[in-house]
Image (cartoon, rainbow, N blue to C red):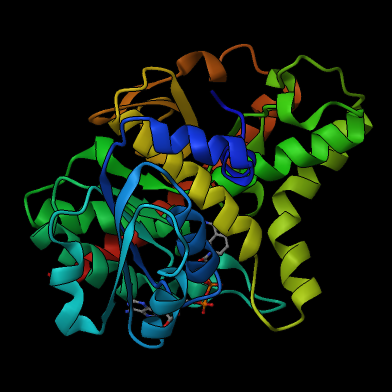
Length: 342
Ligand code: NAI
């Protein structure tokens, strides 16, 4: 269930025919920030999903052309474009899943927290509109710093009286996608089989890959653990530096976000075997939000998987304790921002 099967499914002609013969589920998905570096390829990947009947693309500019372009793909969903705050409510009405990649990305030398000042307000305003127009939707937050923007979203939803912690997700799928790729390369494993849970948060040392829980089970030397952990934690910065000022990860992020959307839609459609890592409200640690594997169901998070945090190696246990102060501070910064506004 954890396999990144989305792209390969959509690629083959056989599968396309197969889809057309199956009874189609029909879910509505909105992407807020759809004209951006992530938004565009993400919209395209969601357009390829057989589970989507309506795809609503929203941005403050440049979304008309993106929607016109994507709408020509001969896959089932109807694509509509929405520009600017005046059209946001219509974009959101009746939507099942809202994905939010709106906001500014990092440039070299920046941390995700440096984005806080701009993105915090963007997320607050968009989630406020979600609360007013589709309060029952799954909300996928991509905008960084995720460690703070998810708590902001939770506060906004609470203020509006519609917070359902089971339906608010920080998208950390890219950390899992990267961990799977790097581990498979390093250990010469078949990529499709590899699954590494990544817990904690989504910035620097708060990203904690649990290599000891890799499936299929693999053994790592101390040196390999250190090298892989650091690479997974810094993979975003690797892309930021390679893009040299032109932004951060967009294509791999779109792939990861599309996988998380597809998993959510399968869960909404009644598939009882859907697991993903995500940054959610959690009681697995003393922190109010924590990324871990979650079981997804029709109502959102059906269960957290406590066993993932049991039997950790000494290295992982230390790293877990070391990440908590930073993660706690980021969560509190988000909550304080949202509470200051009221
Ligand atoms: P981008 O600058 O290419 O696109 C952002 C889009 O958001 C633009 O089209 C812009 O017009 C739009 N936007 C700005 N304000 C808006 C508003 N109020 N309402 C709706 N749309 C608005 O940036 P990119 O590369 O797509 O990144 C977007 C965000 O995703 C950044 O915050 C970045 O840090 C984050 N990110 C998160 C990752 C994760 O793993 N969760 C990975 C990579 C990026």
